[in-house]
Length: 415
Image (cartoon, rainbow, N blue to C red; front, top):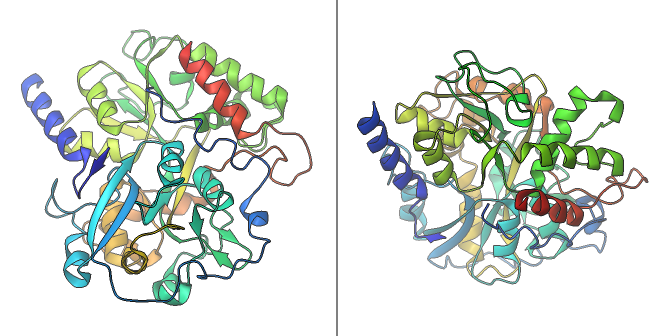
């Protein structure tokens, strides 16, 4: 779905507000790019010696536009809330009009970017970035044209999901953990385990969880099941939820197959999930802070937590398309995106952590405790999304590749 500087969140928030006042998946192109990099990681994909910034060419005149594929809520122009606008000033300063196409899964991002000469940038998570690099869909950037890269969090600089040797395929944008979103009327106290969405049982409100929970419809959700099994079935020996041998993978698929009877919907559209929690009786699901913030702002009885088993998460990179029609405006946006105020404002809106530490103090919207609330100090506890590899990320043993994750998870969702 393409929207020129407008987002589904505006419609979602209006819908939620009206419902609260009145009442006071889908195939996401999972097979697109699934085989693109089964045994290639960012650490090996660039051994051909691509020169940083070579494909992008020298700086030149700004083209007047920049087209970005992004997660919903990542690039706001004040339409939903005038306080949240990091687009208008950029457009005024540069003359580059921002157009955004939202995507619900990493596979959808890979599909949109592959073979397209329409888009300039994509805010890719780690389970997409390696595939985009290996497929030569994105190119290295010239960090000399992005001086604010020097201010990026040291934990994110040169990260393997966007760095190949000395080449950087973009700049970090935001990061955070997936959360367990729940209805506070069904859960007077925060749930302490992911078991409420994985195992059949009675919830604190006395009702069964069957038909009242959701699961993410991207194959990467298998890692959430594997993370749960790391804690509940330690004999499986899982140490990395993205590097699973056959036995470990089969156990995760078995858990997800059993979960199928509980799941009302496999979600990837944030608007649909917001509506389901408001109007369809859904009380628990894996989610993103964005949906939580939207529902809480509308007065819905919603909260979130990271259960005792931990959580998967995302570290997103703004990457430059190999066929970018507006590369100079794209470079201008990448530099703009690292501004501390922009970083803090995005974090406040989405519920994420800024890629630039100064973003923690650079935004009045985020506030003095915003980074702590959004998990800025929990970096080492998050299992960040990455594309499963047959070679177990160079460990030399046999792991299940992403193409099989895609096939098996589609089978789970199809019942």
